[in-house]
Length: 88
Image (tube, rainbow, N blue to C red; front, side, top):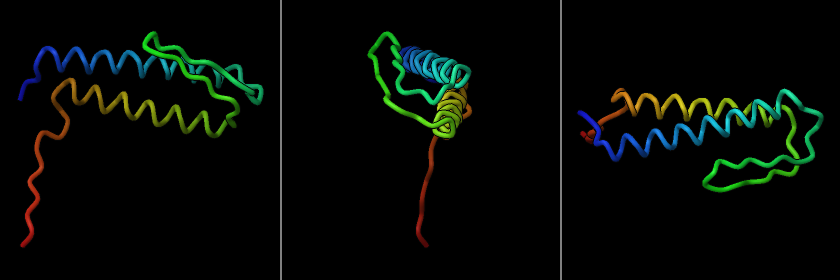
């Protein structure tokens, strides 16, 4: 099942935003010095976080990479298309 051009553009925009966020997290991880705060600006909005431990940053990176992977699968048509649940 093919996706519409509008849907494809929305998915690509979400991928770009997620990749920008992931890059900001990698930058934070690289320069980690018990970060007191950092700011992320995707162009659509900004967010500021006060304190995060290194393990929280690592978990955030894993979560964002998982979301990016799911979006790429959806973009390529490899995601779940339809689920039918039946009770017997």
